[in-house]
Structure formats: structure tokens, C-alpha cells
Image 1 (cartoon, rainbow, N blue to C red):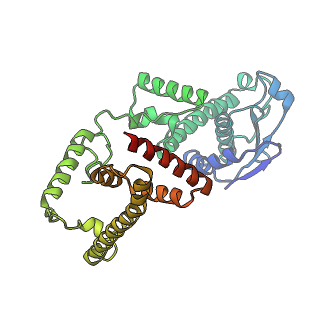
Image 2: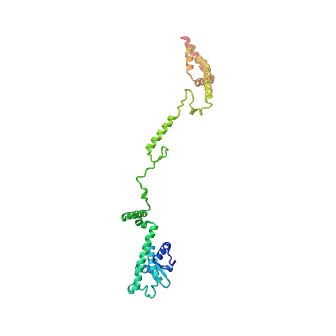
Image 3: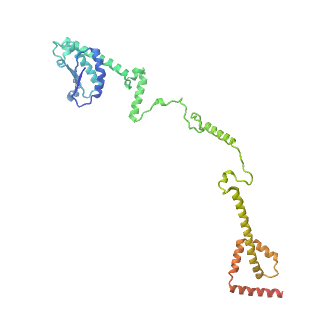
Length: 328
């Protein structure tokens, strides 16, 4: 349907993508029946001229030249639409016998060329505008929200401003998520799956459930002298072991008493030797009973380890004490 040549170093992929939709629409609207050759050109010097060329048409080769330096793709397509009208005129034979096309002020000098230019401006611009509106309707985006959703100018401006500010400061906000009527999502404290229930109410329900479960449990209190169930695993052999331990404790007590009596007998003679025979025997026994096993044992060891010299000295002291008691 058409041929495209890119004689620039610029990326025209966005323009070519839109042309896939625009060119069939323009052919149907304008009615040209021969494929044009479209050449995209670069002319930096022309781009510096505020009133420089934007495009031109060569009737002999059916070639459309479009200058794209520093131009918006939409403006490039508008120029293409204008030149396609000239191509349509050429297909109708309206360029036959015409001269001076493209010269400075040709639309002011020749009435036929002027009429051709009027049609190019009028049909070219309206064809492009109609295609643009249809394309935006079938491909919604932020550029045509106002037309599609019938948004007011004020709302559209506010939305545009909000979007620009968000992009400027590096963040975006989805206002649709700010729903005050949305129910809260609380932790499921009582485990009933209800996350809309308040934490205090859920805690209250949990305590009630735990109270009911405690009431349902049977209260098996251990009898007096019986080992509680939770402690039985820590006690070796259960009741049999406890009886065995009790008998062992009794044997230990008996053995301790026997040792104590043995130590008392060993020390009783010592008290007889170191004191006067007139000392009350009951007093001696009371002294011995008040001593512990360790004290009795220590005293007995001390007695066994007596130095002979110390024993002689004690014997001399005893004789002196006895002689004085006899005089009295």
C-alpha cells in the first residue's frame, strides 16, 4: 500500500506504528489508488528556520518527503496527511498541466494551485483529526480520558496536576485504595477466622473459651499421701520405690542412734575421769544427750589422740583436786 524510507539517524518506530493504522484510514477517506513512497528526511539547517519546510510532494515519482528534525510524531503525521491529499490529487490527474508547484507564493498566484492547497489543508487536517479521535477511543490512555469518560475540565486538570507532581517527586499514590468505608483487618486473636472483630472483643471471647475448657476438664485431685499424676514420672518405681526409700530412711536413723550410743559410751568414761565422782550421773547423761553425732565423734577422736605428756599433766591436776576435796 505504501513504501517507507528513513534517511535519518533517528528512531521512527513510534511513527511507523501509528502509520499502520493511519494509512489504511487515509486511503479509504481520500480515495488514492496508487501506493506512495514516503521518505523521512533530516535537514538541520531547515530545522533552525522557524518557517522552514515541513514536507513536499513530487508528482512525477509519487514521493512524499517529510522533515522530522525536532518535531513531535503527531505533527509529522499531520504533515503526512496533508501531502497524501496532494498524492490523491495526482492520482485524479489534477497535476496535469500545473506548473510552479512548490515555488514561493504559488498558492497566491495560481487559482488552480490555490484550490488544491485549500483542499490539502482542509481534508488533510480533518482526516487526521477524525483518525486521531477514533484511534484514541479504541486505544484509551491518559491523553483522551476527558473525551471517553466525559470528565470535567477541572477534574481533568486536577488529575493531570496530581500525576505530574507524583512523577516530579518520585512517588505515586493510588487514591482508589483510600476507602474510609473499608472494614479494618484486625489480628485473629481468638482463632475464629473473624478479622473484622475488634482485638478487645476477640480477647474476651478467647478467655471465655479457655474458661469453658477448664470447666469441662475433670478435677482428679490426688488422695492424701498419694503422688500426683504429673509427678509420678519423676519418682522412681512409684509406690514400691517410696516404701523402699522409707525403710532405708528408718535404717539410717537406727544406725545413727547406734553410733551415737557408741560415742556416748566412749566419752562417759572420760567424764568420770576428768570430774569428781560426786558429779550427778543424770547431769552427765544430759550433757551427752545434748551433743550431736558429729560433736561426739570429734570429742572421741580427740580423746584417742591424747598426748601422753598431756595425760600425765591431767592426772597430776586430778590428784591435786582430789586432795583438796578430801580436806574439805
